Amino acid sequence: MLREHEQGRKVADICREHGVSQPTFYQWKAKYGGMGASELKELRALREENTKLKLKLADTILDRDILKEILGKKP
Image (cartoon, rainbow, N blue to C red):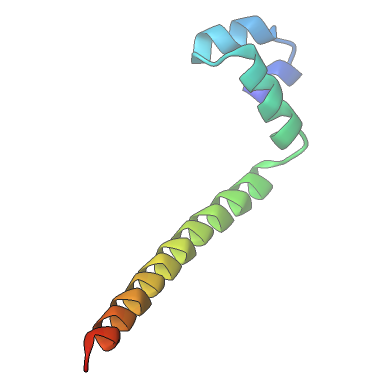
């Protein structure tokens, strides 16, 4: 969408075609405007890795809480 805008298409037309609001388009433009394809791929990979790490952390915290509960109930 950003490339289409850089090529001269109107924002309203692009947004209508893709079903996105104009404020969202401008937020994306501010956030991703100067990035190339390789940078976007790297960003996507980092976000996926971050999501996996957050899930692992949540599982570890849950396991720790379960162990604390089990150990706390013993006489």
